[in-house]
Length: 191
Image 1: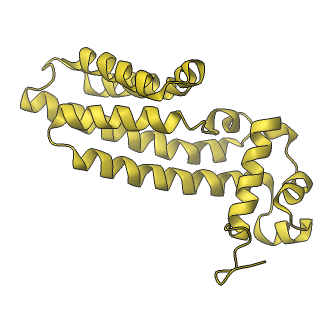
Image 2: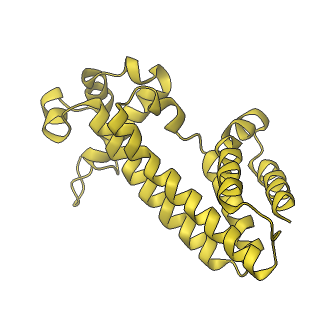
């Protein structure tokens, strides 16, 4: 039964479609996901699905756009709440590790998307790297980090480290431990 907002089981139709697509991608990979399968898992008719999305890629792009916007807002709040560049960098690292520990779908998505869609997914990556670089630049200027720091290269390497944190969380099952060690590695590299 739908509630006053038109949602079913607490999710809007759009949310159900996106959730179904992401679940199928996790199970089968992009190549194994069809509009029929998404419709079935979302509990909607195929025509209803096509009324909202023309293809699987458009569903995935909608999901990643929403996720990236939410992640960016959260990251900005976490970093803004910290005082000083060391604290900001630590909070950014902890936030990134915690987010990667929730088993994101990005790695399994990119291989099956068009070059244009992959480019759209890079926007969040670029914004995050920019935030890291900004913290590093500020920290080097204020003397909290090494003055000889290659900010762009360090930001790239930190982002790669954080991108692999999900694998470490998956292997250990311990988000807090991975976050603590990632903070030590990152701060040790810039001190």
